[in-house]
Image 1 (tube, helix red, strand yellow):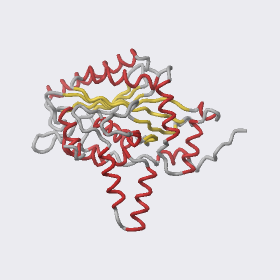
Image 2 (spheres, rainbow, N blue to C red):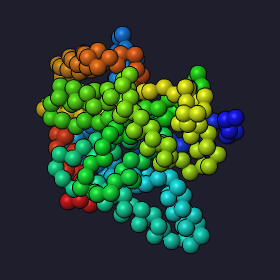
Image 3 (tube, rainbow, N blue to C red):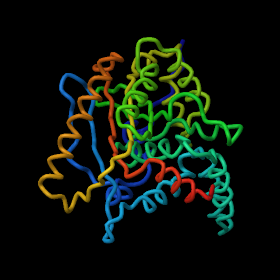
Image 4 (tube, rainbow, N blue to C red):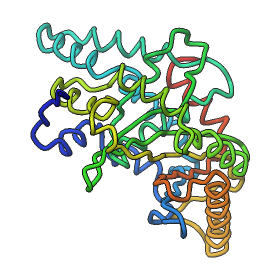
Length: 315
């Protein structure tokens, strides 16, 4: 007989409550260009954002990098260790445990040019703050060498669908100079986790099962039923995706001060990006998979990487 853990009160609300932070943490620095767009003939939604421009006419890259760096601890450190640090603070009044966790988290990032970990950190923020998808697997905490990247997807997050199905979202981020290269590589990388061939997905599912980033024991026990192949709930899991596609955009706009001709040029560019995403969805047979795509042009992805590394104390 299968042992079934009792569902905690309002499982959907308990799971959703794991998502941290607010969209306002980011929205002033990454304003939306338009409302989310559902691509015709697919289940993909694209959100286009530009970096805000300050009163001096400069894109707020350093401010965005600081917000990203401030999220390093929650991105890297499992909730159980954060709860232990909170208890230590409550008992002693000393924040030293949090300081140690912050130091340990920042030391996990690769100190090298061209690292993709800045993109992973931003995607984490977008998934938690904007999509309200809590992280189920803190993959950075599994690193044994700070100079080696974590293999596999950039993260696994979850929500309970309106039909009672656990929706797992695999994350993938790409920051390239070329938008076409970023789009192509992003969907090429995420496809193995979302397609019919599931070797890559199985590896991540095992990691989630063995390293579930949930500190509430009752909630964790209920979630783990969906990862137990002897439990009927294993059939009630749906694979989704979340992508961050970042690239260079030469003539960077201020969305609040765009002239008509500039607005028309950006509209045409956004339409091209949408078509490119649609093409890759077709190429990789992902048109029937629910995917949230964040399309973010930057003045320079290299400048963003450098600024994030500086904010993390790696420069």
